[in-house]
Image 1 (tube, rainbow, N blue to C red):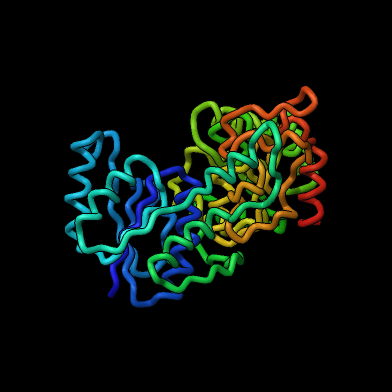
Image 2 (tube, one colour):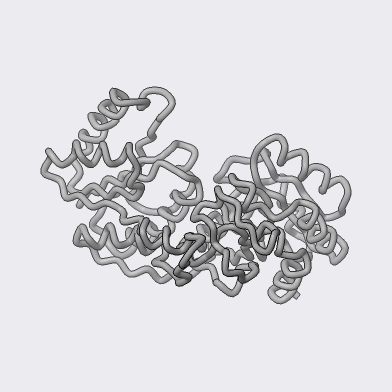
Length: 338
């Protein structure tokens, strides 16, 4: 067995994309064992992928700072890996890569395409063109190590068992839709009043809706929706990541921001309608196997303003995400489910 160390510490959606790539990699390279170095909660993304082992990074405790990274390096050395694939390319992984250069190990580092992304998000002389998808950038790392890897970029439905408390809800003939209406950065979040309009429509037209996300404020918002509209179920903070994936796998459709909800849908082979504001699918973060036609967005020369959605994107005096209407989202859902 060829042994490959793979590092991708965060963020949640990026780690989910790594899992999509590794599923294809392990299928096409049956003589490999992969050690994934990431945060422990993200181990669930790799369920069902053969010959995967995990090593948890704990950046706030034993792997914190310079001496913590030295400790992590000593731990990873014990695997005696043949290859080191840095799929993160941040300060921590660069430090590890530098240390591993002194070992007889083949190294490859993710090319994030920073200059291309800078041109794509520039407010002046913007170069608006599709960049290489992030999943292909991950695959390029393995290719540069000498492995064969062809990504199909196709959704593969996963058969996963529902949590017991949701089994009755899924026995109805109603279309089942998941909604992940939140994101880390506010410029990627569809205005909640508009999202409530979408939820009201789905409730009135006999859809069964499951709300996903995290955090107390998000829980409270979803709880209000579930009380005010029939057929709406608040799933926030109710399940583990693995259980959430089990639920998503049984949906007819997912609706998400440019965030981890889209990438979780990709992991279990579920089509996703995604809503975009300050960011843009051209930056390469569209979910694995998802369709650009399912991206709900408004074309404007100022978009995108950033790769991660951490900067405002003002279009004719209005934030880009605010230009998207509830009707646009509803129409896209209807075109798929009705």
